[in-house]
Length: 138
Image 1: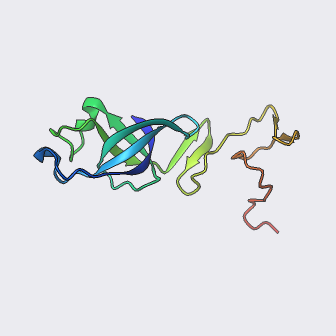
Image 2: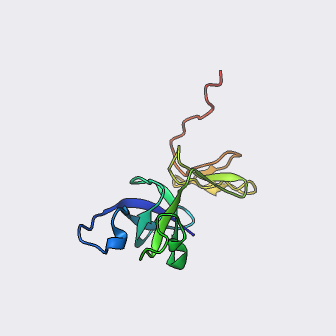
Image 3: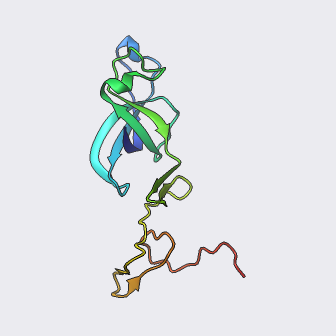
């Protein structure tokens, strides 16, 4: 399975009768930092995904194993909408906060674009907003 982001829809009014009733979405493959790779696939939607959502999709013969794609001429199917991705104990993607996250390094500081350093024990998205996310601490 691959991670991808739905970029749009594909409409085909004339198609094989085995494809009638299927919804087709344009999906861009994502890299490990959740950035688009520039590689696209047209995938059948088995789960009701929407534009901009991060999804899991299967390609090849695996794409024909879902209930709606069984014995149909498809090469890719969206089989899940991603809620969160955890890597090494840190959330690197969350549907509720879709900006890509960059885990902090606990053993070293990183240089910021302004020449200073950033460090900390919380998740950093690499933004320089400087705002607190303490959630109402007084």
